[in-house]
Length: 87
Image (cartoon, rainbow, N blue to C red; front, top):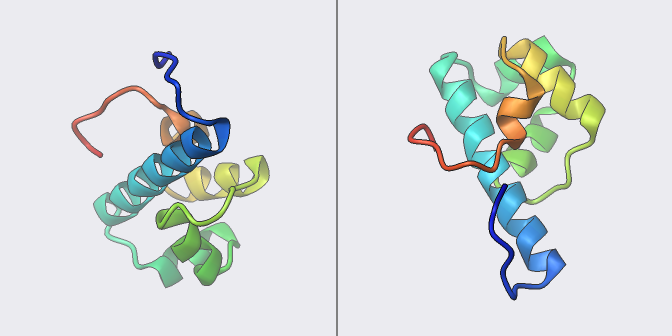
């Protein structure tokens, strides 16, 4: 669990979305997939994947699950807000 800060909830959400996007991009690259290939495997639009990787969209649980499944990982690993050396 992260420490509480004086940041607004919106700013905190933006930070988490950006971190999730970085984890998604890193996982996709580790799997040696392009955004288009991940789109084909997951059924998620390539443009949506791009926006998610940039932290520019609030990903639904279903989309998160589809992406994680295509990457052979748990959706929770994309959401994990603990520090990681893979980010």
